[in-house]
Length: 241
Image (cartoon, rainbow, N blue to C red; front, side):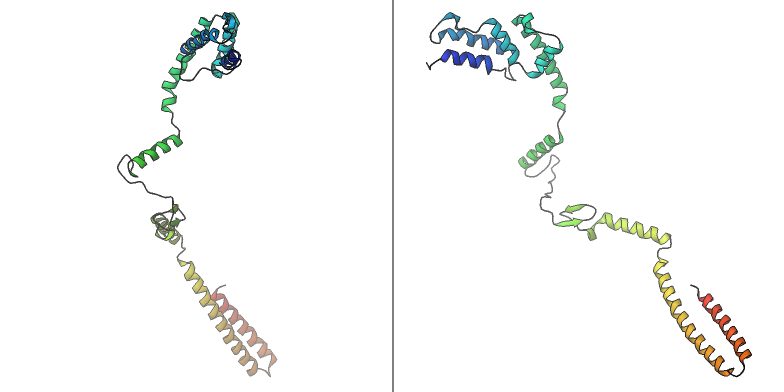
């Protein structure tokens, strides 16, 4: 036997042992009492080497899950006021309530990550096929870019059916508001400006000829210049802004 074997064993049983999750409280307590019976077989082989009942109570409260300890506090259950059997019955009620909760809630609550991992495992086992028998598409290495669908392996923006349809709808709506004539109006405006410059040049020539012809008669010259100016303004107004 190692040196101070009984002290080491008792310290381990008091401070480190805890009830496993898959073991009932009654089975754990029975196994703990069985270990306690073996302690007198350690050197120096005395009967008083067992762990006392008070120490067993203290350890029992420490060995259960933290959630059970909170329930004991909420129900005002104090180990010093109860026996070990009463403590075991109280913990068995907690076990039953947890089993009912787990069976009705936790089993039906799977996170998206868990479902994804399960689907991935099923897909790898079926050769990249889903339950419906269709092959899954691998989008790990994207070869195309679409403004609407983002990175993908099927099409670019120019080949996107959704974008083409949207563009056609916008074009039809724009045409209905007169947007189609915007470019035509710009061409018409440019043509009018050219005509306006041509008329201005022509009017300048006419005014020069009038001034030259009536240079000797100032009154007639002033009258003709006024008429020429009026005629010029009327032409420019007819051309528009």
